Amino acid sequence: MTSGSGRLIVFEGPEGGGKSLQASRLADSLRDDGHEVLLTREPGGTPLGEEIRTLLLRRDGYTMLPVAEALLMSAARAQHVAALIRPALEAGVIVVCDRFIDSTYAYQGAGRGLSMRYLQVIQDFATGGIEPDLRLLLDVPVSIGLARRWAERQSVNRIDAADAEFHERVRQAFLASAAAAPDRWAVIDSRQHVDLVAQDVRAAVAGVVQTSAIGSRTEEATAPPDRQP
Image 1 (cartoon, rainbow, N blue to C red):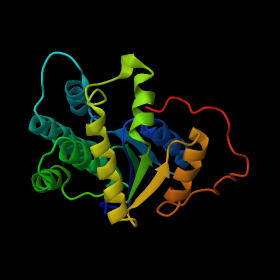
Image 2: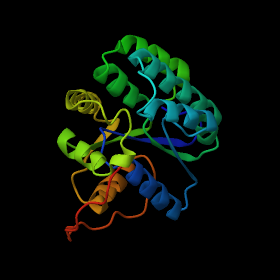
Image 3: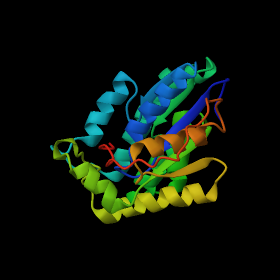
Image 4: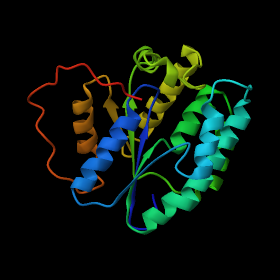
């Protein structure tokens, strides 16, 4: 669990599930409820983390070994936790984070084939043992998620561009993690309209954070989903 009196809510999942959009929407709705909220992302969140993010995601200039990828991700995370996440939690702030440690297990572990045992040691070192209070898995089939990402080619990054088999391993790793610890995960079908996904997110978060009443879903949304980064 997190340290201090704050809460750490993390969005995880394969590409194209809408994590960035839904993290922003959740942060806004929690603020509307009167909570102090920090919205952040990984890799990134700090000036150093954003520089590392650029190295990790750009598609040109070099080939990156899986172990180098994992260590860069973890370096950004160590800075993020020490400079931003831990102080916020200790101050009683709700931290909403777009990706955290489980992305490393899914992408660099299942996806790239690195040792889960070594990755866990590195993550414990980087985070000092901080764990999310809730993990929100925005699940989407690989074909749909990648189609969403490639619909705007200028935004496709190095990890998006990996083959479909890689992304399927990543997705299955997330699903397996959620199935193994259902008390720590909420799995949400992100094929739905973005408004319905947001309602499911709010319902899941109500278990760890006091929220206002969840809106009715009697009227199904029929508009096509927005782009979900």
